[in-house]
Length: 493
Ligand code: 2HG
Ligand code: ZN
Image (cartoon, rainbow, N blue to C red):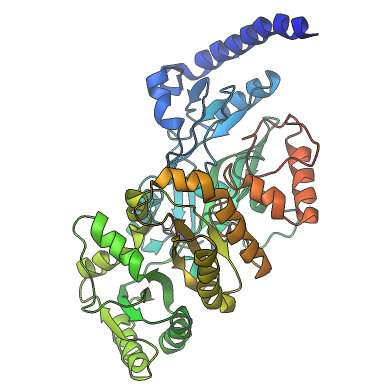
């Protein structure tokens, strides 16, 4: 039998070569490359931990070309790995190690087809970077209310496919809450045109929602109708020092009450997180005179004609300090000060990476349980893994923190993680599940969380997700090896 396999291999390679030839003809030199140097940046994930290989990088010009690619790939049983800005935290867009895959980039599909302030909708192609949508909406007096640190490179297609979260989820929800319509190519090459952005549409299973957060495993999102909200006229941004995560949550509810729910961001940063930023990120400085165990970045906004949001924010913060809920605070007096405060939060991840590798976890529990979870899980992890340094920061108002665990100071980074990293992650995830939480609040499952998802995912949920995957992608060609764990005993397609 072995000789059969060996004999078939050249034929399979011929078929792959024929497919690549067809794709090169279809897409032309702007849309096709198999040059190793061109491919290189697409083969490694943002954190530099996972490396794959691919036969070619395809950059179609429109949805018609995407459909043609998917049909040709399906006929040749060739996997497709869609990749947007390549800032996945879970290697969700990195091709497989065996290298038999095509990377699909929609970077040439960058049109903002329409912005309608009357409908509160933008029709945007998948390759548009998030910051370009922000600018285009603003030019029309509107706003797209989702933001994250990678906004300059993260694309609309990637944000939808990963149901991205970020720092503005508190008021408007994650990406899937903002997707009103979708255009996509399904795994059989058919084109789904669901762009009409109806506010009400009750025709059963919702393909928009199935494709949002599907990590490219059910098809390729080519464009979307996205919700816009009115632009804000002014924002108030403050940095607050306090003692405990409990106080932070208490502060959030007070600020919401005092500002009429105008709080859009509420991010928590521990003292050692701020110290990392100040050490590694140029042009940053401590916002408060003293050192506080915990810090909060808060932003509240106001529409045109309303009172300056800084006034209500400042009053509420003064009251919180008087009541002993916060220790100190500063409200940005100008836009450049506001930007400087945001920089301290948005560069957290970069600063942590510059300091060395960490075992990263993106966990959520019910909002009210998060303060207790942060403290008790930190104590549990630090007691079990001597010297380990927990860095929990992020979206407290959403019940989601990045519960990252750094090696003991002075230890060779990689070696400690190689020895303890998996055990640390299992421990953190066990604690999360015991607290009724999720092991992936906003980063997705990708490749790096797949084994843990298989271990801890509710079997009923996993079976339903596999059934959906098999129904829409029976050949298993859409971003294989991501998101959906194989069933026990199931072979990879
Ligand atoms: C953030 O909130 C990102 O800054 C990255 O989700 C989190 O690096 C991380 O762990
Ligand atoms: Zn985050």
